[in-house]
Image 1: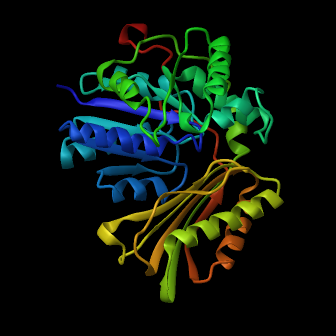
Image 2: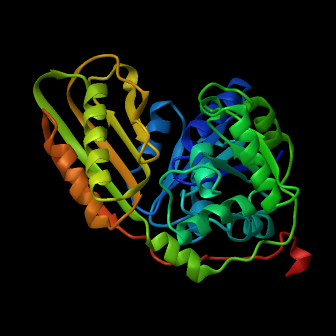
Image 3: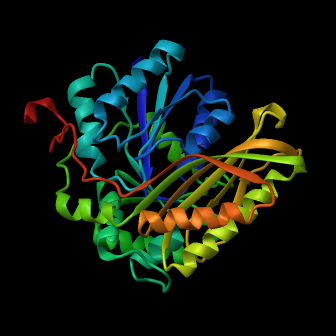
Length: 370
């Protein structure tokens, strides 16, 4: 049987990495070999560290989205094939990327259809963010060109997945579902919680049994797309932590995230996603502590914790927000300065993503249409 290729997309902060981990564990429990592929505009991903800490074989593609690094995506799959021969590949694209059908899955079908079967493409949504994007509820929101990308992700997807259903009432979820279907009649909308597992079986069954339906690719204005991405500041950093006495890494993450959040709010930056991890040679079983923040008015939330105190560790910070990259760097510095341990910045990159330039863009999935 040909390996299956599954892509789980969606905007920054929608819970993609948690969902990818849950799907990978389910497949492994069923006896399948799984390979994961993460993706980012920069290097040193918290997602990669988190997934590897759970024992998953993971390849990371930095320096651009899958559409612009298509050859690297293929090479990553080949590396995984050479090392572990996965029966299922799960790919998580950059959270600001859209047009995945025309630039990733249709080229895979066209050029490598003899090697893979392709599952329907999913777009995960944080329902609180989505309710604001659709004007159904008040609250901080992105500017129009960032919203353009957000809505194009929904239009592009075969399956729209309202994640975090455990945090939102059924009535609010139904209003959001109705708004999505009104905008794109016939769009399939699922409701799940990657955190609790609710609804995951039905979604995962679709991903593992069905193939992507060939249809006309959507139209995308790449000028607006590029301008929307350019409004987002991007920051990746690696920090070495040390102290003379053992400290609580979980509490440290909470302190640092809260201080960065406070600084960003003071600067008027709209947070898309802040994700931070700490790993340490003193951690039990190679585990990682992780925290994330998905909106300005949300509370930083620990998703994984370290059981024992540590004296040294490496912290990875990935921050995306609608703000100048320099503002993100300043907020990070304030967060590090507030820590009660030594925090040595080893790697820092902050920038705005460049204009998307896809390696391929096919309007149809089938070879006869070219």
